[in-house]
Amino acid sequence: MNTSGLSAVALVPKAQSLHDGMVGNVQLPNPIPTPAEFQALIDTLVTANANVDANKGPAEIFARSEADTALRNAIRAWAGYVQAASLGNPVVIRSANFDVAKRPTRVGELPPPQNLGARLTNFTGRVALHWKRDPDADMNHVFMSTSNAPFNWQLIGATTKSRFNADSLEPGTFNWFAVSALGAAGESSKSEPCLVMAAA
Image 1 (tube, rainbow, N blue to C red):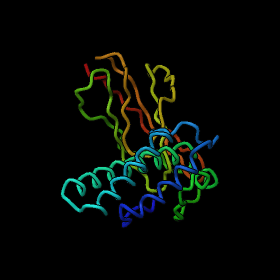
Image 2: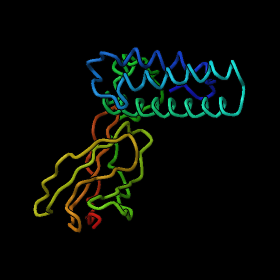
Image 3: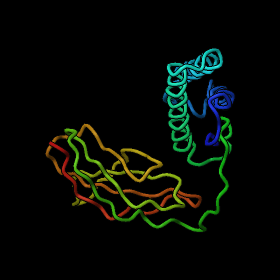
């Protein structure tokens, strides 16, 4: 994202560039927040910066800090969306005016994700999955099956993180889950399946 170390003032042109790259981008049509909401966050920070310049009082400084944090969170959300939607394609990433991090990539297919499990959650109908992330994985696909004889895997989500919440499941029911890793050489095989009960 290249935002660490940027002041609240320097963050504005960086964010505006990202906004301009996302508006009308047919390869990335559904960012959250929307471009209009993102622009409103930029405008709020511009106003907060001006207020601090005019009067460096505690209220103005606090308001600028809040606006700065909100905009950085939106940039982080867009970065995750771009990474997931682009499948790591540098052309698509650059079309949104994000920078592409160059890192060595493993040659060959990635191994399947390891240590797939679930943690307890109080959200009815949710399964909170987690696994060990491979550093060369750009993204993970999450699959669910209602049976294991045979498995009938359905893709239910994609994430750049090593966790995923499967929601709106029938409370108290058991389902099988598996995860694959996507990297430069394509998609790995699925992880060992994990049987988990949706929170009741």
